[in-house]
Image 1 (cartoon, helix red, strand yellow):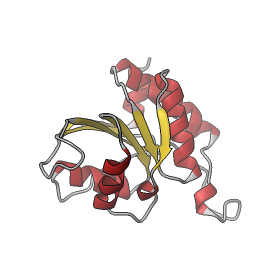
Image 2 (cartoon, one colour; image 1 turned 180 degrees about the horizontal axis):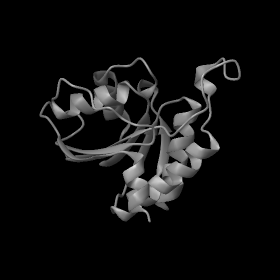
Image 3 (cartoon, one colour; image 1 turned 30 degrees about the vertical axis):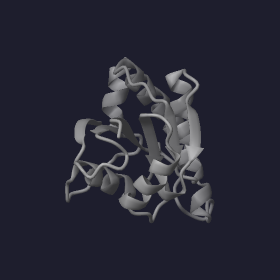
Length: 167
């Protein structure tokens, strides 16, 4: 079992639910969401973040966020859909699906609240979910994708701090 660096990323600001987007799975990022998340990714670059694989929820806003992340990191990071990152799946479902698909050890997971907060808590052995802001990112080092031991929180940053680091 090899150690893994897990970066948990909440999708950026998306269009509001409503008549314009009756199908929640198709809601896209707003122009503001795109601009701000590009700046946040610059902050991740400033921190020296390197990611080998990005897994995303199948929802449009998460896929767009994952594409911005991959492009902003400037490497050939592959983006793959992980169905368990869609709303309504348990942290255990996410980790089971991920352990069958992940080939590398620096992994980003792009998804939604409250699932991501619950996933972070699960990885840290905490009973309280972490509250992710849209475009927020946390870094957790774990023993391996199938490890039962709690991971270690490296950092948990809201998008405003990531954008500030980029300046």
